[in-house]
Image (spheres, rainbow, N blue to C red):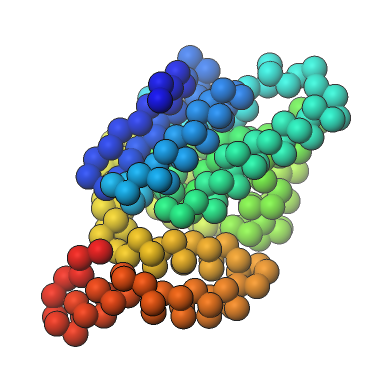
Length: 254
């Protein structure tokens, strides 16, 4: 499959998706969202891929936001469809993917860019990263899940402050409020993200898939799903190999 706006690189069991629109600071337009969605479908079904990293090209911007020119003339119905379609084919897809997705936030992550990072399961950021949701400066609100995911990560009070003020926050502040997991120099960001991906890739894919679903269900029926998934894993090959390896004092071969 040929892509115009993204690049895909495979290293061992890790696949790196780079949003490659440097002239627009990697802004998300409709075609880029579709390409990301298609790439995720490919990688989810690729047995050689166990972890996915999403980053932006260059050192200035992860994703600087949505491409405002595309929807500046929309009415209510078109705007609702834009938000619903984007959430369905990309943002919710990332969150519920069967494989872990790590955001390597290399610079600006604003609006849809921050929403993209928040949809990922783990977020690492560079020291020069600036994060924010500036939609209220346009008379809008976040439309790709930002009003829902941000409070879950940082709490309602801080989420309200970030959304209402539209101010950008630094990478260090983002780490303080648990919006990102770790902060590195721009040179270290991708190597450190790959390092984490390699560690994750050595663990049980079946277990991680179940863990993703259970963590995502924590706001609803998470305890029951955890119990059910725990039981289901006992009949799966990864559990049998993992327990056998532990008892035999060797590393598991998942």
